[in-house]
Structures are given as C-alpha cells and as structure tokens.
Length: 113
Image (cartoon, rainbow, N blue to C red; front, side):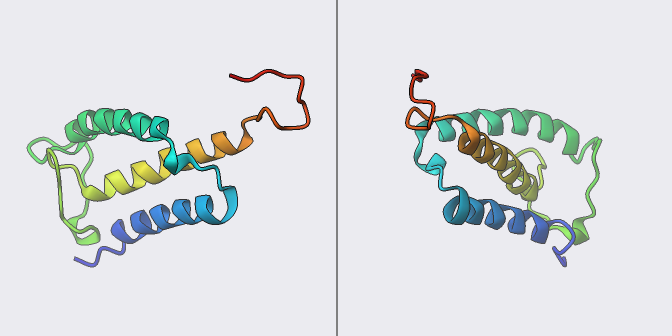
C-alpha cells in the first residue's frame, strides 16, 4: 500500500486549494453557509454516481489498491475520490467567487443583491 499513485496527489490537491484560499484568494468562502450547503449537495450526488461506478460487485472504474489507502466508504467508494472531488469543486467555486464583481468595485452604479 504505497498510496503514492492516488492518495498523495489527492492530499496535495486538498492542501493546495486550502493554501490558495488562505494565502492568495482570501474570498472567505469557507465561512459561508452557502458553500457548505452546496458542497453537501455535490457530495450527495457524488455518492450516488461514484458508488455506482466503483462498486466492487460490478465495477466500471477499477482502482489499483496498491496506489491508494484501500479505504472505501460508502458503497466501495475510495476515500481519495472525495478528496479530489472536494479540491476540484472548491477550486472552481473559489475562482468564481474571486472574479465575481462586488458592489464596492469601481463600477459603483451597478446594483448587486
């Protein structure tokens, strides 16, 4: 169980996204309830789809267990999938939030909710 093939990049992706937010973007996204609700929705659908794709009884996607922790939960989903999913979705939301115009930007005559 080396974990280097799948686990390490998954952990690095999570650390990189957190560092990007804390050191560069500083959007405050992690403190917003809307972010956590949206991520719960994403995880709900991820469990359904990923569970179907990775179920050990009839897998569509097969992982080399030597390159992961071997921990699967729920429904045979490799836990690394959740790390990659979190990093991908959160990175997109952070970049979206960062580029979103704000009411205090130079264009002050534009109204925002």
